[in-house]
Image (cartoon, rainbow, N blue to C red; front, side, top):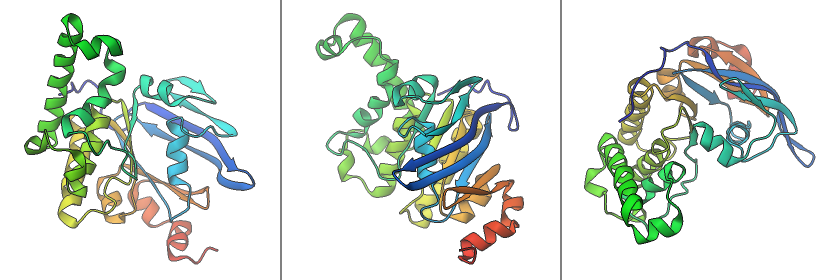
Amino acid sequence: MLADNSPGKGGNVILDVRNISLSFGGVKALTDISFDVREHEIRAIIGPNGAGKSSMLNCINGVYQPQQGSITFRGQTFSHMSRRQVAEMGVARTFQNLALFKGMNVIDNIMTGRNLKMKSNIFQQAIRIGAAQREEEEHRAFVEQIIDFLEIQAYRKTPVGRLPYGLQKRVDLGRALAMEPQVLLLDEPMAGMNVEEKQDMCRFVLEVNDEFATTIVLIEHDMGVVMDISDRVVVLDYGKKIGDGTPDEVRNNEDVISAYLGTSH
């Protein structure tokens, strides 16, 4: 599907988050958060409920505009970016709460991830003639490769709302992959899944990272999953960073242990 032309794990910094602070009124969601993400790694963000993990992803992909700090992507530094700018630069995202079009089938849902790649306008796409038709056929062929990769061929024409939750999560991943991202933000991709579904999703995440060299930033509550598949982990608690390092380093960090045991507050 995608060529693997990126350096191995531990490569150059592709995403650098510096001194991000975010408040909603008088409530501080994030306070002076800094960390980086290297090319081709799986970088996990963990922490108890309310730690600020999803807020951090929302800052990275332009949903929230932090009051302080900057984000550098491939050497370009921004204090504010729109969601479209972020997507055009090669950052895609899945969501904790699925935002799929439940009445549309699997193919059409994943096709929405190709919108930024399409050159024809809405009118040309509607009448589907000439160059517009050829372009759509090319994009649909790409989407079919994603469907094959995610092993959901049998559900291609099924409305997404009729699919089990675990398969809907795959469609959400497929839509993000359709953007051909350099960095993929995954917001609790295993939430609500049974053991078998989690194993499948872990496999797909690892294959996206290994075979396509896609850099992944992952929020996940299942610590077994985080420790098994992550290269480095940053830990948030009450909007502050309390740990950063390899899974083993984080596992043995006293501040992290206290936060998860509920003894630090």
